[in-house]
Length: 134
Image (cartoon, rainbow, N blue to C red):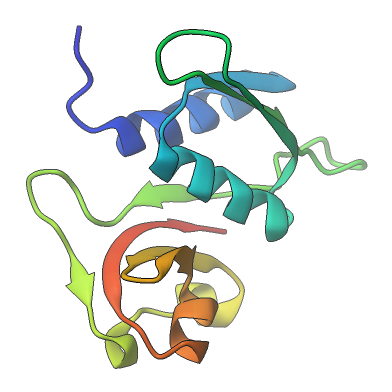
C-alpha cells in the first residue's frame, strides 16, 4: 500500500514504537524526514539517529527513542501533524503558534529550510506548519 502522507506515517511510526516500548524505530528516509529527525535530536526528544543510505532507494532512518530514566515514560508525550496533505496550513512569522506556552516545539518548513518555531521567529520567516512535539 502506498503511503499518501509520508510525514504522518513517520510521526505515527515513532508514536507506535514508543507505545510498544521499542528502543529503535526504522523509517524510510526522505529529505524532509531527515530534517525533522535532526530537529528532534537537537531539541533533545530522541537519543540518537543514523541515516542508512544503503537500504532501499532513499535509505532508512534509524532512530533511538528516548525514555525517562525513572518513570520509563517516553520523552515525547505528544507528536501531531498540523499541515495535512488534504489541508495545508501556512502561517506568517507573527502567527506561528506557541506549543504549550513555549515548552513544546512546532516544526516549520520555510524558504530557509526546515526549522523550529523559535528559529523561524528569530530569522523572521513564516512557512508551512508541519507538526508539533512536546
